[in-house]
Image 1 (cartoon, rainbow, N blue to C red):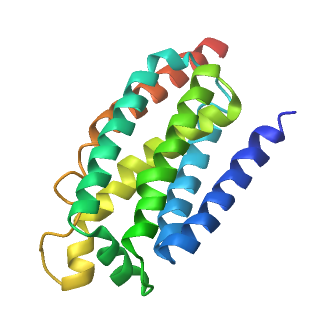
Image 2: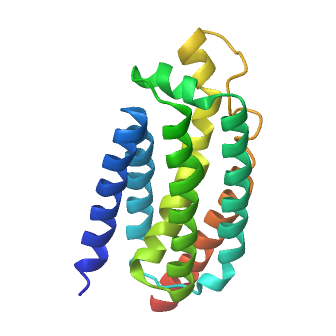
Length: 187
């Protein structure tokens, strides 16, 4: 059954990448694919091998969801769909943006919380996928102005992009610390 612990996350990220492509254009799978791949690599080094006590990280995970939702609201208010359109070369409507970032993503991350609490393999993958997405993908907001305008200029999402980073980084630290404890306990 251990092979399902690898196949499941792989199929999940492919499915989410395809779904995001239809709603957001190429930027969706680039961001989701990058975060999903980074999360998968981290998953192989942590939860896949070492099933640590997820109660130590669930609060960080849930706070990250809350701050991500606040961040998406700022993106909505200031028209991140226009930024996504410019970056992907595809028209991304406000409805498509909200369908993915404001509706589907929070449902996906909350479902991940349930799987994390249950300590299922795919839950450990959700944990690393989400933390990588929030620590790396959210940092791209600080690069977008230079890509779009060649200089620093406010773009939708920049003001709150760091919010989900804080609990996600803390959660990553806990994940790595708990993994290390189990790794050295086996040695």
